[in-house]
Image (cartoon, rainbow, N blue to C red; front, top):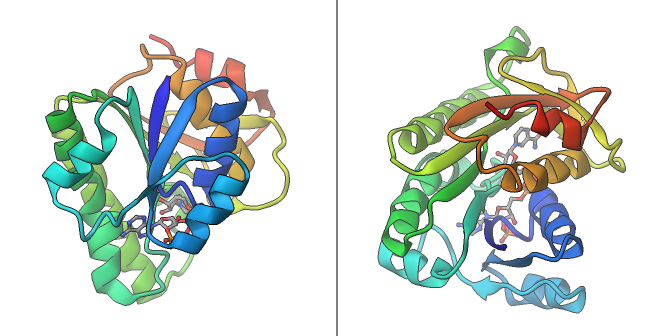
Length: 217
Ligand SMILES: NC(=O)c1ccc[n+]([C@@H]2O[C@H](COP(=O)([O-])OP(=O)(O)OC[C@H]3O[C@@H](n4cnc5c(N)ncnc54)[C@H](OP(=O)(O)O)[C@@H]3O)[C@@H](O)[C@H]2O)c1
């Protein structure tokens, strides 16, 4: 399978690229900076220079054409203010979905964010803005005719993966390791019948392959 990853140089993205490559898939994805492209190339990960915000829908479609699936795991990370959050986290997935339709790519996995169940904790204004943007992005994807899966992970950690998760329709969120999110996405891509569903994932004790297989209708 050929998979195009938006955010391929990011925390989850690079882990997913490694996972998919190790499983015999081909990956590609947009990277903005040449230095990051060199870094990824050094470990055998091919990328395409590009910026989701700067590119048009037609340019994105051209960059992605020939792939079997798209994964959106990009994010402005709150580093460049609310406008960047709107452009990347909020409008990015919908724009990419339009490009996917143009390129004839049906499978689309969106990495979203944990929902209300975690949010009794007090959050600052920027964080609330991010949550609104992510919710907007989910809505944009749900409104398409694509074969989408929205995956809502807990707060992400960089410790090595446990190989186990708690995956389902509604979870109480704590934390999850980026490695485990990446493996969950790789497994979701292997299960095309898990489709048009919003799943939540947090750290847990179920082996990932079985956790994803249990989501099959
Ligand atoms: N952090 C958390 O605790 C948390 C919790 C739940 C969900 N999430 C979601 O999980 C996903 C992965 O998070 P992460 O922390 O692993 O990501 P990350 O390390 O912050 O990486 C984000 C990636 O997005 C890319 N990106 C940003 N703007 C872009 C643009 N205009 N065009 C192309 N690429 C662009 C970045 O590229 P550059 O390298 O060029 O900057 C980077 O590779 C995100 O969607 C995030 O919203 C995060």
